[in-house]
Length: 383
Image (cartoon, rainbow, N blue to C red):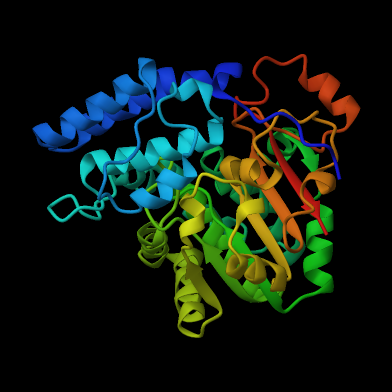
C-alpha cells in the first residue's frame, strides 16, 4: 500500500482557502436572500460567515442534536482558525453549523427545511434537465452497449453537460476531458457478473440525479443488476448533495414527462415497489471522515455488492483520502481499505488526484487550475 501523503490543510491550498474566504460567505448571502429568515437566523448566519473569514472554530452549542458526537469528532479542532485544520473536516463541519444556524434540527418552523431547495428546484426546472429528458427519445435506437456508455458519461459529468449534449456532440468533446478512463473494465465486470447488487453512492441532486436514475434504470432493464441500492445524504449537505426528497423530486420529473423519460420513471417506481431499487441514507455520509472510518454495517453492505459506484468529487476525496498524493500513485493502492469492488465517477473540482499516467500528468500541468476547474473527469475502477 502507498505511504500516506500529508492531509490537505485549508491554508496550504488556494482552492480550499477560497472556499472559506469567498464561497461560504457568498453562499450565506444567497441563502439570506432566498428565505424569510428572522433576526435570530440572520445573526447566526452572519456570525458563521465572519467566523469563516477571520474567526476560530466554535463547537455546536450544548444540547444541539449530535453535539456530543461532534465534540468527539472535533477534538483538537475547536478554537483554531478554519484554515488551519484538515479541509475535509472543516468543510463538513461548516455545513453542520449552517444547519444549526437556521434551526434545521430544532422544534419550530425551520425544522427539517432544506435551505438549498430553491437552488435545487431552479436547476430541476431548468433547460439542462429538460434537454436531458428530451434526449432519451433520441437515443432509444442505440445498441445497449452504446447507450450504456452515453448514460455513464451523462452521469459522470453531471450538471456540466446533459445527455443531449453527449449525443449531439458525438461524445467526442466529453471523452477528451477524461484524464483516466476505466469504463471498459466497468462494463466488463457488470456483464461478467450480471444480476447482482450494485450500490450507487450519489453526489448531486438536479440534473445529475436525473442522469443517475436513468443509468440505474438501464442497469436494471439490461439485467446488469438485479438490485440497485442508491445511497443519498440523510440531511442537506454541500448545497447540492442529494437527499431522499431530491430523489423523489427527480423521479417525479421523469414521471411528469413524456415518451421514454416517463417510461423510465414508471419502471423505476415499479422497481422500488418490488424492492429492486432501494434508497438508503446512512448518517455516516454526513460525517467528516474518509471511507476508511465507515461503520461496520455499511462496510458489510458494500462488501456484499457486486460493485459500488461512487459519484462526485466529495466521495472521491473520502475514498482515496483528502491528501496531497503524488498524482501518479496507483488508484488501487490507496483504495485497499474499501470493502469491495469500487468505481469512482468524478469531475475534478478539488486538489486531490491519483491514478494518472505520467504523460497525462505532464499535459495537465500545462493547464491552469486543472485540478479544480471542473473541466476534467475520470472513471477509475478497482476490482
